[in-house]
Amino acid sequence: MDVVRLQAQNTKFYDFTLNNNFKVDLEANWRTKVCVYLGDCLDAALGLKEEGFNPLVLNMASPARPGGGYKSGAGAQEENLFRRTNYFQSLEDKDRLDSSRKWTYPLGEFSGIYSPSVLIFRSSEQTGYAFLPKPIEMSFVAVPAYRRPALTESRLTDKFAEGTKKKMRLIFYIALLNGHDSLVLSAMGCGAFRNPPKHIAQLFLEVMSEEIFRGKLKHILFAIIDDKNTGMKHNPEGNYEPFRSVFA
Image 1 (cartoon, rainbow, N blue to C red):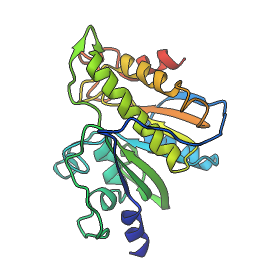
Image 2 (cartoon, rainbow, N blue to C red):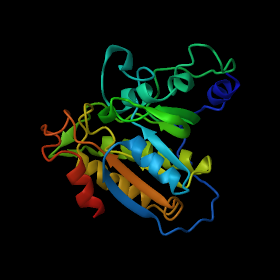
Image 3 (cartoon, rainbow, N blue to C red):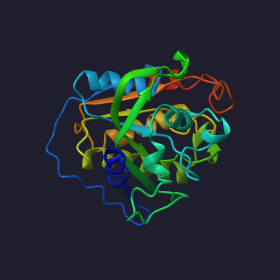
Image 4 (tube, one colour):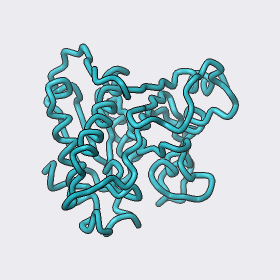
């Protein structure tokens, strides 16, 4: 229980609603490897960890409640994470393990939550959520995308594009501030939230190319699964192919 208590207490809340200062003093100048992987984000993150990286995994979170609809059987990425880990003890903290916590849900437009030392104990849905031989620690950052933003010709309108870039900067900032050398990202908001995948990929490319973030991470991996929320009006080609085309 002491390990889990520390996990909850070390969870950090960031709010950049009134702040645009993403300055991080880091002298790294890596030749960042960027790849798009057709598969599960935790499988990808565990693979990076086995290679000696220290990855941070993006949780494409619900802004309304921790875990989204995991209790009612929903099956998006965040719900999958909650079924395979003890992440709920970081975000939900029903047992009040972190007695000094002042933040709560719903999350603000430019809020993010950093959760270190979450324990992964189950494998992917495709394996029937088989138990792992032993739990493995992983760190997560919860930043919600916009839900059904305004689009013009399969692109976010300027307001939502700029807001999305600020959300992305928050992800990179939290990763660097907490000592991570790699990120496992995904098609942020491109499923049920109906964000256009090609434009989201282009915005990620713009943000990671900004001077403050360029060369600061060793590896950036986009783990994408084309599921029931693909092949729709906003993503007729799925999500994997648009990302692959941008980062090819």
